[in-house]
Length: 344
Image (cartoon, rainbow, N blue to C red):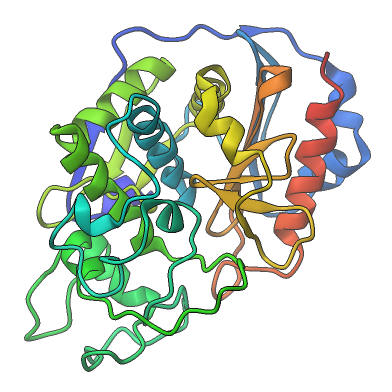
């Protein structure tokens, strides 16, 4: 498990737990798309919660209800919650450039607006390429792959002879690249780390304080673990670890928060995600206009339907070379969307 192997981490407990009563609706399991998804060998856990009830919960035979699981990039949604509050209280203006909040932002981010970073609409020499080499260190301005990000996150040791570096220094060291104004999502994990820096500077509080407050507000039952880099910065780009039940609790918080920042995320104003005609990436959430959510590497997904006051937490493990399979996330989205739509 990630929290057992990352070099550094932070742990948070909520002072009060959001109790979720068992109120199963077994008919939900027979939604055709969901029934197929639950039979996939990759399946680990599914928890669907509405208001203060668990309406469907299924776990694989070898995956206990209290077992922790890596959220991967679902962790990015902490930015939506923390930065959204700062936007709504006027502490952050998404139209302003990142450099106005973080003077050290560096070439790739200084002249980008906060909104562009929120929407994954920044061009740099970084690529979310899981097959890219770990070493040697790329020359200045040369393409940088995801293995280098994992050094910054504290998930890998740096190559021999190279000093450690954190997520903020890594993001600030990226080079700007020519930008195509096509409004396609340029999914880049360092964007999240840069936004964490904006949150800290604009609020005057450590990023870990924001994480702790979100955990408390969500009412998580188990410990929440998150990777920390060599500077002690929580790795919001992918370092979170929760149980499936707590991921559902966390999703219910996103539904409860609502507000103008979420409505904007659902407005269709974001970048086009993955070539889809309906999915948009806005304010660090994915949305089709009815639900919001986020995928995570190797088969994780959180979907929240605010109108239904419901959240679906899905964990799985794709045991392919790079944790990917064509069409898999589309299957997850279709199944969760169809199931949540059946709720009153």
